[in-house]
Length: 109
Image (cartoon, rainbow, N blue to C red; front, side, top):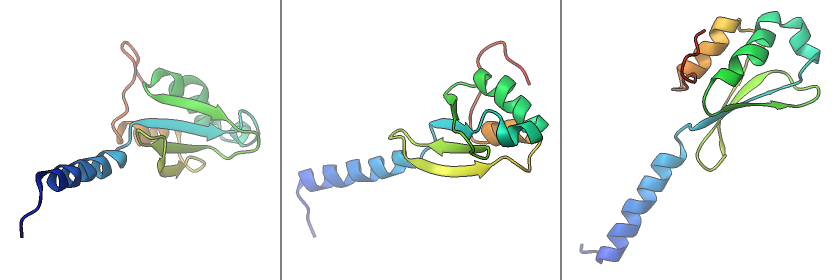
């Protein structure tokens, strides 16, 4: 079966769009700045000290929200959500680095 070139080009572009839309490009910590963070010392340290060191990661402060990392694609669609309440500071950092996030230059854990 033969297809016109335009159909093939559109098909290839559609496949590329689907492939890139699932790629994580940004992350957001969603958490109350106090509340549950006051009981989770290591997650609190991660939120207040480590998040700002990462490229393409922000903190959205939501009153009453339990701490979660939300991973987004290039169209700001949610790809994954990871609760942090049971993790320590090192594990929180590992969640980001395991998904390809890096710290700004001259920043260390």
